[in-house]
Length: 85
Figure 1 (tube, rainbow, N blue to C red):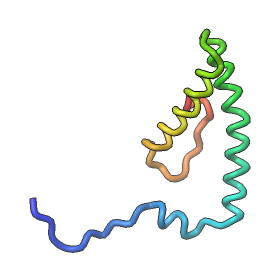
Figure 2 (figure 1 turned 60 degrees about the horizontal axis):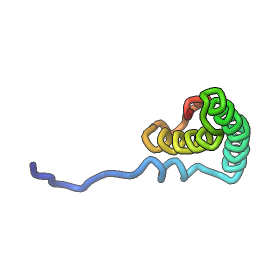
Figure 3 (figure 1 turned 135 degrees about the vertical axis):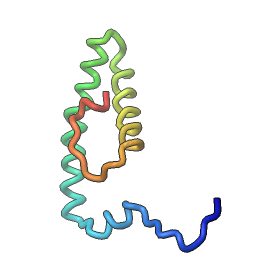
Figure 4 (figure 1 turned 90 degrees about the horizontal axis):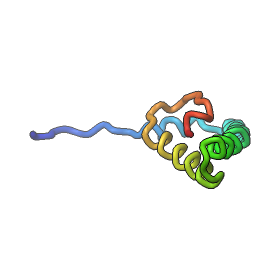
């Protein structure tokens, strides 16, 4: 396979950050805090209901969140906090 010509690749993050403002950052920060307030106690409750320690529930929620955000490619999404559990 031979590649010729310029490669026209620009990560989506570059174009998304172009229109990102401090106001949007504040909104995203508040939304993240609210989701954390809901998701972390829910993870502890699911862990207790499953018969494992609450620590396992927290670790699962955090690792699940990173896993989902790493493999999900949609820039704007609305996801129920339980998807990470």
